[in-house]
Length: 142
Image 1 (cartoon, rainbow, N blue to C red):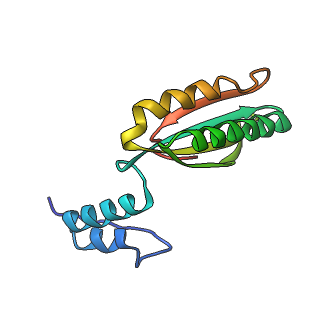
Image 2 (cartoon, rainbow, N blue to C red):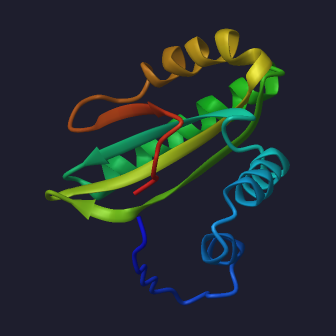
Image 3 (cartoon, rainbow, N blue to C red):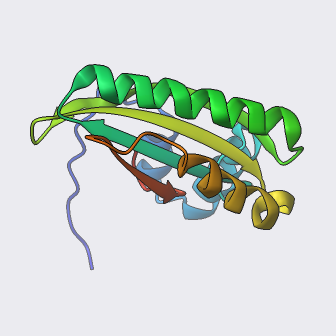
């Protein structure tokens, strides 16, 4: 069906807008696939996001630091984990809880070996007043 699409963007020259403007699905697919492969994003890797939250900001930050150290050591011991990064979650506070996240990039070939180790290490995080949640290949990292 014919219709009219209005896109609002700060970056109209971005390749997504260019492909959308010309209805070039296959061009977009090829470009996006190449970008994801180059940057090691799914489906060319597995991303595990550990979200840590607490009403006490210091507890959440400390748990994130401990989790990062555990996963960094795991990365050194395991060939399948190739990147570990810790940071504040983009939404820093939600429902009265401070939020931090640790993002782990895992090689596809090592997913079955490395992912259970990530879960095992995250069980060692302090749990009093702190909650943690692991999400695999998150749709968004908010």
